[in-house]
Image 1: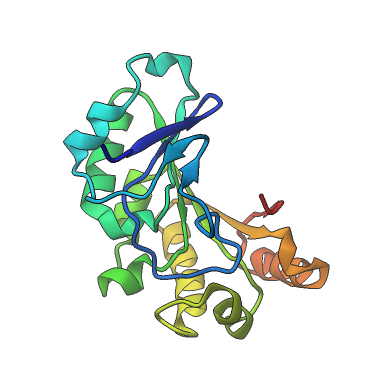
Image 2: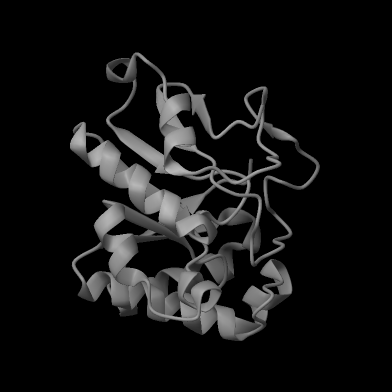
Length: 197
């Protein structure tokens, strides 16, 4: 059976797709089948009913924030994301998405309105400080356009009232982390520095 929902500690995560527009050097998918003994490679992308059916029965025992984050870029399965988020909001849960910020390129149009409505927190993986370095490490199918697109996506989400956060992995090096901090400050977006797992 495909695993669309998994837990780490008291956090619930939703795994919507294997598809991703990036092939990052530091991705958790490299050499792994899943997280916390849960296989996350899926054969079929779920609809909302399939995701909701896998949510734990004891939801109140978990954190109020539920995270769209699995083995792919969640915005590829945008319709399911939107419907599941709506359900979660109806039962007083908050939502966060961990995204590469390329949703508008993926869908060929601005979908930031859907993301802002669906996700209370929009965590965009900034990953690098320039388009060239981003492409070197993240290898987007959209080439160097990906970096500018994710910056624009962050600004669109902010303008629509979304709570946007950037993240980087410390493995890019101290100098590049500092440059990312400067870029994030310029855009008025908080930056979270993560340790490579």
